[in-house]
Image (cartoon, rainbow, N blue to C red; front, side):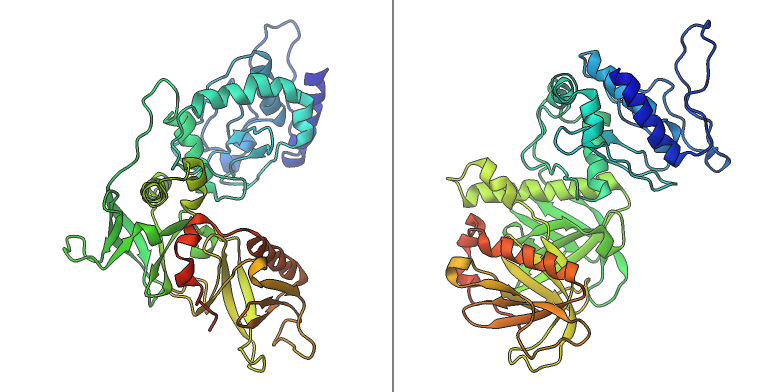
Length: 438
């Protein structure tokens, strides 16, 4: 009964995407059982990769498999009480739709290169399979095998992360099998050298630059000349952060590296054409950061240091700001909220090398708060909704392009103000306490 219900749900979902095709094809009941073939590709997809005739578990292009096949493969894997090895399709072109079932957040970890379709495996689908059965016989067994030795520095992507992180995580686990138990543990990457495309500080042109990571010394250098001896910049790992910003940079492998330079935040925007290469750089930086944190905070357990290695912005977007007297014209600026360093930075443009100003965000106990809406008598230039950030030194007023943006900014700022200061921030709290928005 469970598989019958599963098939009906899968067929209905499939028909929403593939109108007019019959799946599965009718077979002669007297003929021996054969694997159900994938539907014939359309003319536009005639040259796409072929998939395994008998799928093993949850992986393959969306338009080449029926949904029934996907769910049946999942059910078969669960009922066999074995952990089937994932069998990827041909990797020569395009992008594969990767399917991974997580007990708490089931989701499709990929996107089809033609239809750009993303399918979520909802809680309803999991309930049809039997949550308890799947837990003990599917997900946990696969995780125990393929994630047995994930190093602490390695970034495990979340649902909101960009595609390249998810894809390389899946490839590292199932294609390259980097973390399985019968292999030696993954060691820290150590020193690294290579070329990345870096955006110029004063123009929008990306140029090829040589980067050198000296993990033991805790330094990242980059050179404008391939064989140059003098680096353009020497970055201390203790001041460094790295976060993927693919939409902002306009490249699917876009990485933003930030560091402190003379009381400012310097932004480097880089990418590499290889997804593996840019993710390897990201994790190499994380490994060097973890090494620094262990030396800086020897009494803290590793589990408390891992969240401090790198961080994503809690919220980004445009708002308008006015000056300290609240009579100055409102100006549109790009804002970025760094939750770990408790900074609200603003830029004239999203890809500026340096911020124009920043506001330090303490805690509610220190007299910091955020209030909804604008003070009486104050109106923005083009936007009518806004918020106020109150610090012991000043009241900052911002307007938002919509009520939705206003709510998101309020929630994000309240999250920071209500959270305690982190060990990393306490290390430099005295230096940061004087920061203010200009």
